[in-house]
Image (tube, rainbow, N blue to C red):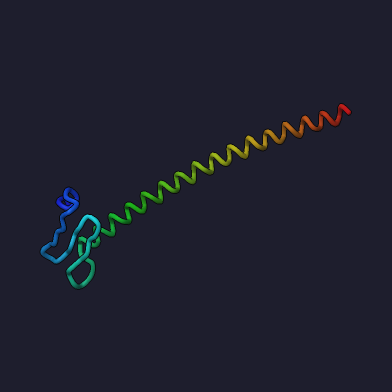
Length: 91
């Protein structure tokens, strides 16, 4: 993994027949996923988890911003309605 990470043009084949390149990992051993494939799946799951956490944080921030904007709009509405009532009362 270190060699492939340092040299993007290198492909490595393990004794068990696993192929590892910078863009692909494939198991050559029969009888289930190899340790290399499992590690690749774990790395991918961790990456997707990180992306999901980031998406959740962006959504949380957007929700807070929307709540703030709604609160400000509600306050403006109340002030405007109050001025309208005062104007009507003055007539």
